[in-house]
Image (cartoon, rainbow, N blue to C red; front, side):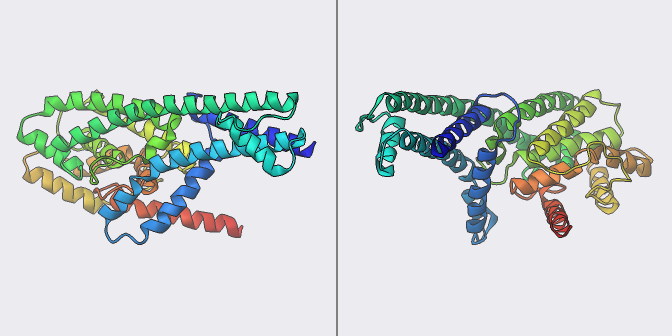
Amino acid sequence: MLAFVGGALIVATTVLSAIMTLVVPRALPVTITRWVFRWIRWLFRLRGKRARSFEERDRLMALYGPISLFALAATWLILTGIGYMLLFWSLGARPLVVALELSGSSLYTLGFVMPPNVPTMVLAFSEAGFGLVLLAMLISYLPSTYQSFQRREAAVTALDVRADTPPTARAMLVRSSIIGGWDRLEQLWRDWENWFVDITETHTSLPALVFFRSPHWEHSWVTASGAVLDGASLLASTVDRPPSPDAELCIRAGYVALRRIADFFGIDHNPNPHWPEVPISIDRREYDQVCRELIEAGVPLKSDLDQAWRDFAGWRVNYDRVLLALASLTMAPYAPWSSDRSMIVRNDLRHRRRARSRA
């Protein structure tokens, strides 16, 4: 009875995990999926410590997402096989090796072992059905994953034209000023607002996408997000231009998207931050340096830079922490004002974990 109940629980938990991961269009925490990704990530971190450059580590981490998906599918199959092995053994398939052979033969529809009785025959049919269903769900999952990945990366690559590599808000605003393309920025904010809405859905319902790296080692969806959000924040707070509702809506869409993704991965953040009660990772000297560079490039700035700084910090505080945390989580390549300071969040999280363990 214990073997039967244990096997049934293993099978039910595994099948439910696959359905919640591949079928349910909602961000749901799945224990098996989380553990597989964490263990694979630990192995990759262990190997990544030997990398002599970021390019080498990036090539290694590019395999993390795909290999984790493969390991997840293998884990589902192995757990299903173990669960049915216990079920077969409890119904008379003895010894355990025979139960294992019967489970493997049924799961992979090989049919080289015949069930000894009617109950085990029914189990064999159900196991073969579950195996085919798991395979079909995985096959349908992969195309949608790569379609979402291609949509994401098309915008990230196109940003290189406006914001350089690595992307920066300063380069985006300077180039717009030089070519007289301020009006074109309005379409950029609208496009990226839609982009943020898209990743809000895809990167929580298909969480493996978060770890899929860009084709070019210097590109990252996280650093691209930071450059766009900083560009919109500087435009809304510092650049002497008419107010842009599209830029402000883009900022809101951006920090909502990053927060939703951070929530899925259990990243701690303030849901309603206010500056200066909640500080940001950029100090006034860095802000003033960018302002000087913008002035030298001919970008018109507001006369009261003190108020402009307060306005910029008020926008940045909405996405500052989650941006840095996601840059750390994904091991994003270097980019100013995002991944260049992601260690701040990583060290802070380590200190919090140690404090909790001591408490």
